Image (cartoon, rainbow, N blue to C red; front, side, top):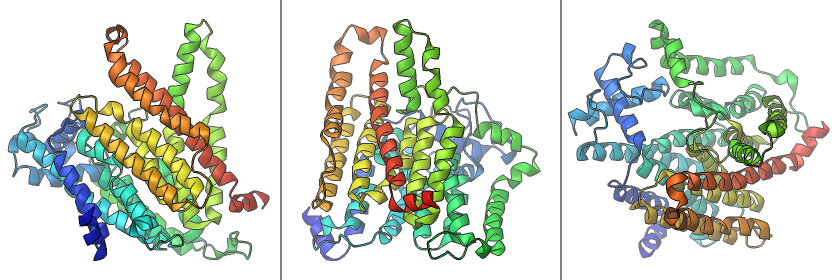
Length: 501
């Protein structure tokens, strides 16, 4: 803390926060890593050892290349550094290879790639207004936001223990958001187009980008009431956006088009043969549906009894609601765009096909930006982040990581709640009694899953019960946050004006 005060006194508090979390990541290098570690090692080997024409056909390992071409080229660049550490990791047939040098290189590659994330956070902090600025640095929105993003629990454990490269990918998204806040729309569009060709999961939020850029960039004037002036449409600006998409897509997919391999690439990117739910149910609508469906079957009721609930959440119904939100975003600027981006991400998480639990980070991190602006948004963020982060616990199932994940989760959650309570101390409480009871229930749930259940006779017969309990319990909280976020958009004064128009 004293070191932080010295750094903050000189105006270098952001560098101190970034350095601190980087050192923490270095300490996590020896920890457990998941099969995703082997996935990325195999991709290093594929891109380094094989010609381009074989990248999306190679299947020696079950972990085939299934990310877009820009990420494949990213692995190719990394592979030329990897050979300086251990050439054996670049052998396609060296399955499950994890020498100490391989581990060191791959861990360091994630840490170094996070440099982009750190820069993006710095840019996002510039977009935060200082209306609630305090004399105390630790009470300023920019400081709180920096901690919420740089020290995000989910990102640390998923990338630097479990092992993935979400940091720099989410950094690209945050940087594109910052550019839109800064009225640098073309830069934001370029960054997002590039991001889509790194990881296609960001297609979830593409509607928010498309409609916002159409409204704010292609239409150049508004009426006095804020609605669009239709005759202000700029064909040149629309063409420039189209040209960006075309050039980025051509650079990414052009080589595979020339090789007549686009169908093969798309078959890897969109493997619809996989089931609706991931092996570990992501805490979303389908987890709740599966749990209720199973319960109904156990008590003798046919599962079709619950089928109407799925039809009520059909894509057509959700799209109609989504169009209203996106139309609202057109009227309330970058903050409205950000809110609707989060809604797109969270709706895709709630109702998407074969959703991974880690996808919740796509909503949590952007929600951090809203959390320092309004007390209502802070409340939604705290429920979403606490529940979403806890749902990641089953990813770290080895005993040595148990105290690490609990300690890091507690530190981040306690800081999040205390700092946002302090920021909005003159407004109504961030939680009502029901929300407090629900969040406190995560403690008994963890005790039950980690300590009590393994000692019971049910453990050998029903080993996945803790996963089911975690998924279903967290799905309730995430669904509640999703609902509250919808309500916040629909009850926004700008939204009411939009509906009247």
